[in-house]
Image 1: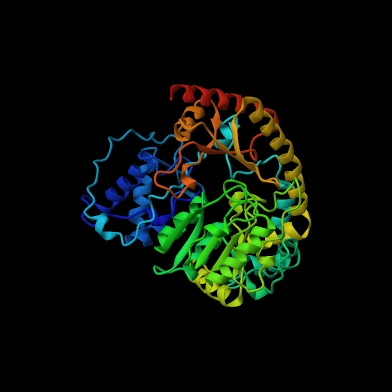
Image 2: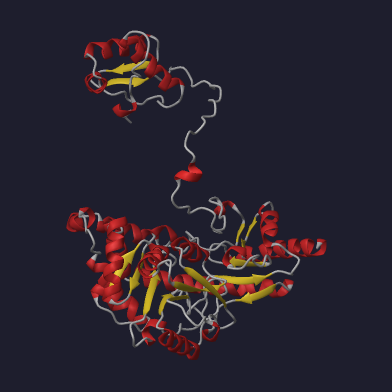
Length: 490
């Protein structure tokens, strides 16, 4: 590895000769650990040009550092940090710098302070990770994904790999969504009614930015996807939360006036409730009377292993008032960050213009790789494999929860990847989560999902997407024991 020439600069108020200052600069880089043993220094010509000094000055500095065993030279290759160079020393902690900026006044908008839950990066190191939103590497088809990635990187797809799409999307990916994904949800659309996004969350953000203003009112479910609530609060619109029941959002509980209704009818997040067909029709009728738009997040519809999911709300919409949000990130892998919006042309045109001004388009090679993975049948095979495995894990979890008498609030009639739980009233699941981590168990406290003040503290979510079936029983036993201990203390 070559140390970039841009990392070198001479302070204008430095003392000593140029040669001595260059020597000191390089020695400090080695002693601080910035330059590692075996790394190549820039050529004397390049460093001289960069620093604006003569080449002989740099050469003399290099030669002196070589004599002191900081550097070593290799024939026709240049100078490298010597294997015998002094080890980095422990420098005293630098004094705390006092920031001269009053950031409480300088910041025009604040985006921190949301209720996004903490999810440990080392979740896979826990023996009992009942954590939502992570993929199981044992289920993923690495070989075929790699094959599709290599194909997307090939000469034939060079244009898709390197081109600036500007405001367009990969035609192969759009075609697959049109011909295969949307028909499974009962939806028909044209190419200019689809927009590829950086996951469902990006799709929801684009939608909120296009549809909402400070004078408009949005409706969310309570509890709901916490990131959506944060997005809407940042938009400064008026926000109304409607409590859900066992069938999801209740149309009769909607306010008299609203502009946009956000809902997850197929698989309510996080309770897993599924909205019946009669309620879907009632919601569409209510929205029509209110002249409101509906944003349908078709959350986890792919993970339906108990029975086929109901048709999407958008497929029942004759008026064009439903905007549909889909995602491949949960079903393929979370780090993919690829989703899509489906809506009327006028809406998609504005969402596309906004996306273009922010990030132009999702990376072309990711879109093309995904298109191959989908079109070659690997995606369908992955979904079937996930469904079979999740069915076994869900069965093991429900059996273990029932054995220990733990309260289940929602499991989802089609399947899904998690179970919504309720602990005894005296149990704060944030404290429960902290106590369980030391015992190797990860859960997801439920308070961040609620738009109430204060939110209920005794709900939590258990996912089975990332934990093998054989570990579920022991993990639930630890969970039950800790809940019993905390409930007893209350």
